[in-house]
Amino acid sequence: MLAILAVLIFFMFRNGQKRKRDQEALQSKVAPGAEVMTNFGLFGTILTMDEDDNKVALEVAPGTVLTVHRQTIARVIDDVDAAPVDDHGIVDESTSSTDPLVASEPVIDVRTDAEKQADAEKKSDN
Image (cartoon, rainbow, N blue to C red):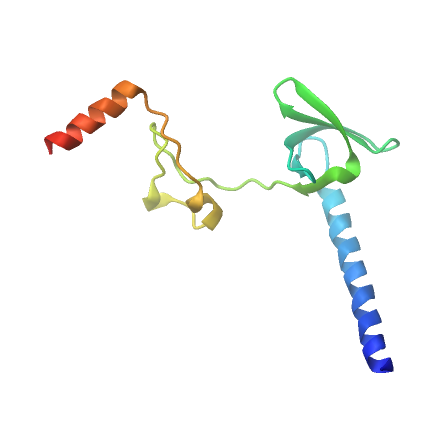
């Protein structure tokens, strides 16, 4: 019984230390200019940080600035090489990234109705 209790206590301390290290690593990346995601799924860019009040000015859209608590920052978004996209929003799979998130994102058709009609006519002619 005592051995099981000792193992349980060991893992509790280890998990606590791991969470503390992860939180410190996140806080070291959080700086003005960093793109971040909050706990509630809001993406934005940090403009300013007030260390005394633990407030962060987060720009979520051009000209739209929100003030959130510093602890709501869940992660820093790293730059990911996106797959090349042509003028019609179609991913060029021959040079696409091996990142499964990039490869699985849906492609949005941004063509006008006239372009769609012209493509449909070309397909029907073949």
